[in-house]
Length: 276
Image: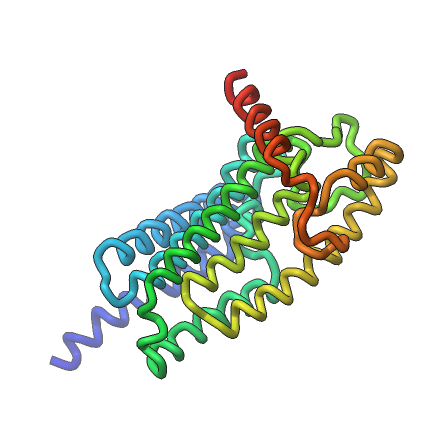
């Protein structure tokens, strides 16, 4: 009986080893622009997105975690999808942002560990569903803001800070950019916080808020130095009139640009763009 069990296991192990060797030696998997690697990334995100949705609908104990997985998967898939629409020449596995940085992976892993530890030690704390629903609302609002920003900026949006002005590079100040200068960062900031509110992770909520705020403060400072060079007069005027999008980064907590008239104008521009 033991021999009959070991034989199939050995066959599976051999097949898996062969598969790993093929993947490691095939540039379609090793190259970030390889179709096999890009396809595997999309397949993985499709699985996790649907798995998260299934947990939300059918699991009474892991519904919270399912909502978290769903929001994470949707974010990374939309990053790739919008890049494919407006910057197809740069499209690669990196466009998913799944390999964003070691710090990003560490933060995500720490939040998951916190969630399951607190679920075991303080299970009642994780059963407060109004907070989870609030987190879903915050995360999806942040996602909407970032997606809107990428759509509005179109080919002017890139995942990397532009250090050299492209020939067709334009300063986008319409639509959601009437409300804040960096809506994609604003959306990411609130999306990240929302994911931790979903899990009701008190430690990660505070940590994510502090780390994200410092990250975007530094990134905005670097990016705006280049924008001042690319658009000397126009960007300085825009900078004075519209806030950054991250509370407190430029000393502004309640911005004037978030007036109802500005919001109505931004929505109007988006509607006109959709019609055309």
